[in-house]
Image 1: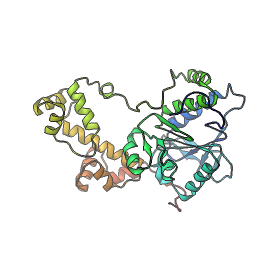
Image 2 (image 1 turned 120 degrees about the horizontal axis):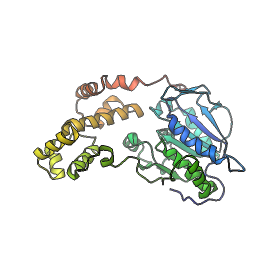
Image 3 (image 1 turned 90 degrees about the vertical axis):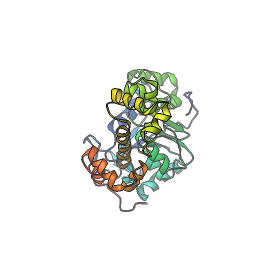
Image 4 (image 1 turned 180 degrees about the horizontal axis):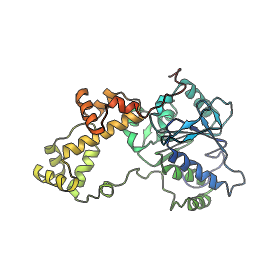
Length: 335
């Protein structure tokens, strides 16, 4: 990650900044990215300037059903110093040669390119993150890493690699933009903006995205916590109880008793739920097929996967994938 000391021109976030909204984007990430800039403008002689764009200039609805009317489209002919993509649910549905061309033209002009939440899939699909450090939300990190092997993927809050900015979304966008303000205008201003945001400190980008497991689960038994970590880190296959017990140094009987007392369900059921959650994330946030999702979480039979999925979520994997989707625009010239 770049230093928080002011840098020489060109600025990391030259204006005007285009925030490009994709259907079902996360409002929290967009607001977290814009608000630090708005507050910084109170103290800047040359303020940050930005505009909201969509693919076609039409209103875009976020994942809460809130509709935003942008000021333009990627076809408006304007030149932008920075382009930041804002997406969440299945971003690659909105990828096209047209979008790729527009992004490459921005890069050729020296624009800074950024992505919030899962929008890194779009930059990576366009080949604009190859050889760069980048991050996306933890739910889709593994899918992103497998999908784009040329990208140096980190499960961090945010990454600033030369003129590429990516963050995990949510409030991590605050820290990324505060770091950008610090690089462009100094740490004193960035800290002042952080105070206005009631943000206790500017978190460094290399912090882990997720809470410690013991904090999330309130389970502090060392062997049980170790077992839960192992299960969380191994969504790609089923793990039987003897293997898990051996891994954490307990007998199968001890392990089963701890799970019953502290988790409320057995290790096999707990792990299957985690694997299905991972599959659901892959289906909702990437272009992976249902069959590929089943294989990714260790189900050898598609029928078994579909039954387990329906049992957990009340609908089939295919129906769950399509249920939150809206008809994507401008897909006639997909690359």
